Each structure stands twice: as structure tokens, then as C-alpha cells.
Image (cartoon, rainbow, N blue to C red; front, side, top):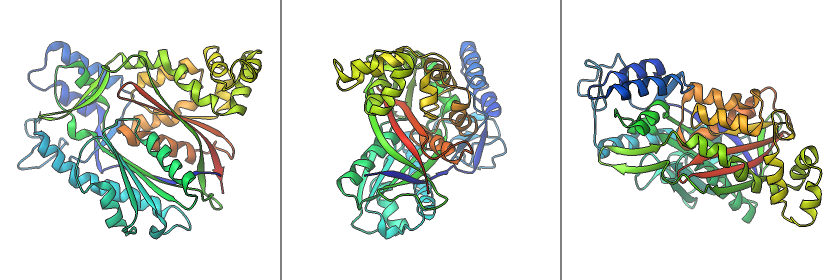
Length: 412
């Protein structure tokens, strides 16, 4: 049975942050060490970001807020509101983004009415409240009161992948299930000035946005693009627990994002992908045939599940290898420019295959869990995307956790 992801839609708040302007403000904050000032300049300049979006309307140079809580525009000072102030704004603004993204997804899915939704899965790690966004979606979108609701909270940047996997499992258990998946993140609520290198890196990357899609057994209609959700895998790398983390502090949530993360991904991305590719016999054999002659024998004999064959294939990759041709599109979570650089080089991908990820990062920054859905929409909307194309999606988060998925493009 096919399980499809349809009607991917994205939303960003209207306030735009221009990266160069934000860089200069952060670099000019009082109390920064000279080393921190240099780190701010380097982090912002090398981020690969031009613009980001925020729900904090006063976070602009021309703000006229009389009682600012986050940014004193007159003196160009970043303020330090407590966690409660930040979370209260999250409750107000995240609800709007969740509902708008969900509404757009419903409107973009032909032949689907709100009454058809049987499950809601929401995702966020940048705030908390109850009744939460899952409840608000049911109320505001007119879904049935009996709609089953699930919230994946505080998982980090990879969380939309297990959300899609969960939705797929619901549909496999009940072919009549129709699941609305919505992710919304307000990362800008937790940005702050600091001389700490991890905080500086986070401040140069994170932003706000939301995305939603519909998962069901229904196929796309004429003119509609969709993704068949083939396989998902989860891998925790042997190292990295202390290099990417997300904790609650007195002055907002505190991100630990070590500069070592790209190196961890570079070292372990092959082993993280191997079990995913091993789930797809045709893909594993196609890769093996192009790289190692004995892979078929391994997959059929000493390696019945194909994991070793897939791993051997991946460790033999080079630029222009069969991996970049067997899988046409790559939705890589743009956790940062260096992460994309490492992934492209390690897997032998082409520059064109990283354009959706790089463009998402350039125009929107890192929106935590919502970001991977933005990248997937870029791929679906791309002129070069064709029926039957394979898509590999991969997102990284605290742990270090790697969530990956294989998908196939469907055209109605």
C-alpha cells in the first residue's frame, strides 16, 4: 500500500532579519570579548544566510516599541527577557503559525475536507503550552472532536522525520487514516548575546517558520506532486551527546551547538545511511553493481539484510559515483553551511543536488524541525523533479541523532 505525503505548505512570519544587519548588532553588544566580536563576524559571514524571519516584531532597526522586551532599537541593545516572557510570546505566535500552515495544507489537498482528518501530529521544541498546538488545530480548523492528537516536543531539528514516520505507521495500521502533520518553530525567541562560541553560532543560524503536509493512502490527483514515503531509519552516532543539546534556562532555552558537529556528521554519515539503503533491495543492488562487484554476493549470502553491502558501497563513494545518480534529490537539513559542505563532499553529491537545502538556508535560516519540510517542498516544486525520482531526506539533532528517509516522487 502506498503512503503519500501531499500538500506540503510553508509559512514564515512577516518580520525579516537581514543577516548583515543582525551581525553588526550582535557584534556591537556591550560586554563581548574581542575574541567574541571576531567570532560573531566570522559565524554570521560564513553562515550561508542572507535573510531570516522572526515573530518578534520589535527586532528591527526601525522599531517604535515604547516598552521593548527583546530589542531596544533606540540604543541598539539586545535585551534579556526571562523564559516566561519568551514562552508567552511563543503561545501567541506559534499558535498562529501552526493554524496557518495547517489551513494551507488542507486547502492545497484536492478532494480533502477538514472532516476527513483522523489524526494530528504536531512538532515543536521552542516552547510549551497545554492545551497545545494539536488541540488548537482541531479547534481552529474545524476538525472532528474525535481527532486523535499527538505532539512530538523538544526533540530538536530532526523531529519532523519521526513525525512523518509516525503518520505513515498510522496509515499502515488503518488505510482510511488521514494525518495532518504540522511543525512550527520560533527559534528567534531564544537568541541572545554572549561570548560563548556555541551561543554565537546558534545566534547566527536560527529563525522562525512552520510547515505542514497531509499523509494518507490517497494518491495525488492530476497536476499534483506528492511523495511516497518508502522507508525511515534512526541512528544515534557513537559520539556527539555533548556537542548538540537543548536545555531550558532562566533566560530562555539554551542551545549547545559545537563547531565539532560537522566533523561528527562527516565521520558517521555513511554508517547512518547504510541501514536505510539496506531497506531497499533494488537501490542497494543498483549501488552495489556500480561500485563493488562482490556486493550482490554479500547481500544474498553472508549479509542477508544487505546492511554490510550498503555500508561497503557507501565507503567506496567518490564524486560522480552511482549514489548521486541512483538518488536524484537530496533533502539535507541545513543545520549550517559547513554541514552541507561536508555532506556534499562525503557522499559525492553534485552542487545541484544541494541547491534546495542551500536555498532554504540562504533565505530562511535554520528553522529547526520545520526546515527539512521546506527543503522537501523545494524539491517537489523544482522543474527538474520527475515522476519516479528517488529522494533521500536526512535531518540531524541532539544526541547526535540522525533521522533519514527514502521517498519516491509521485505525479498525479
